[in-house]
Structure formats: C-alpha cells, structure tokens
Image (cartoon, rainbow, N blue to C red):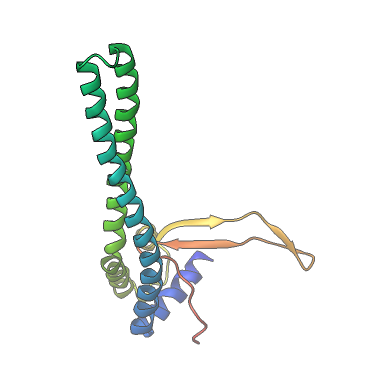
Length: 169
C-alpha cells in the first residue's frame, strides 16, 4: 500500500510538477501565516513579560537593600520570578526556531521535488527510498463502516507532510 501511494504521488509530482509545487506552497503559506501570526503575538507577550520581570526583580533587590524586604522573602520571590523568566526565555527561543523552520518550507518542498526527480521511476520499494520519502505512517484504530471494518492509514512524507493527490489518470 505504501509503495502504491508513493508511486502515485511521485508520478503525479513528476507529471504535474508546477501544480504539485503550487499546491504545497499554497497549503504551506496558509498554515504558516496563521502560525506565524500566533507565534509573533506569543513572542511579543513573552518578551514584554520578561522585561516586566526584570523590573520586578530589580525593584525586589532595591527593597531588600533598603530593608523593606527580608533576605528570606527576597530569595523566595526572586527565585520564582527568575524561574518564570527562564521559562519564558526558553519558550521564545523555541518559538523563534519554529518560525525559522516554517520559513524554510520552500527549501523543504524543493528537497522533496529533488527526491521525486531522483526516484521518479522506481519499481521496488527499497529502504533507501522509504527513508528518503516517508517520515511516518499513522495507522488509526479500525472502524466499522457499512458492516465492514476499515483502517484509516495516513502517510506523512518527509519535508511536505501528508499529501492529498487528486485523481489524474
């Protein structure tokens, strides 16, 4: 089944390269724009909170120095704020890395198309071809449909994810 789906996908991509790339780019752009907007908002909120925490920690230290705050109270409060600040800094790093990955989708589509060109007429599914194209195969729980049990299987390709190919024969 994987071999048949892969052959069909590769054949479609080879014979309809412009449409295939256009569809992938359109799907990627729509998804990326939504994710980018959400990530930018989250990064902005996190960075604003990090700056606020800097001010709070500075104020706590000043209160401790002038004697308004005990050493024990200062340590507890500053530790909590510093932990939150580290967590937010890590979160911002992850979000920025995800945004960078999302922006590299065009390169990933080009890599997939280069594999299509390289393996456009394979007859046998070898481990090399499988590793080149397939990221993972998801097999869902069987369901009873019209008195028959059916499994839904989704093939996730490297670089482009799940691909829906229209009938083109």
